[in-house]
Length: 118
Image 1 (cartoon, rainbow, N blue to C red):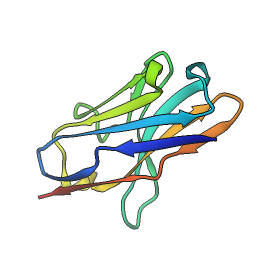
Image 2 (cartoon, helix red, strand yellow; image 1 turned 30 degrees about the horizontal axis):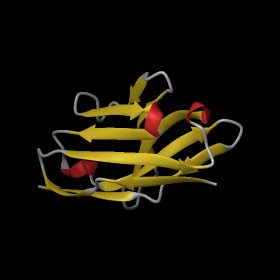
Image 3 (tube, one colour; image 1 turned 180 degrees about the vertical axis):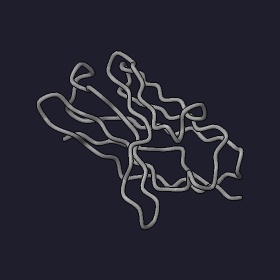
Image 4 (tube, rainbow, N blue to C red; image 1 turned 135 degrees about the vertical axis):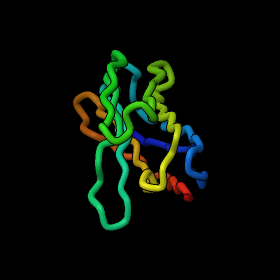
């Protein structure tokens, strides 16, 4: 069973920064963790992709966060990070981590709340 544990959410003022972390654990080998990513869902809205990163480290960021957010990963720790700078009130949402596990499918974290006050 694979588990994704997120941390780093919280309340921050507009213009501030937060760093989210997500560690995958369970009966998995590092080699089996493929793409990892972050999604977010604001109240009344659909879940949307924020950023994703391949196993080799190629990032893909949503246009709305380019230049402000950075995604990175540590394959040895099966961990993905999301550095969020210049946060805006519209970034307020529950942020979910995802991981594609070889031959096993996509797993999701429980979500972490990010609130940006104006």
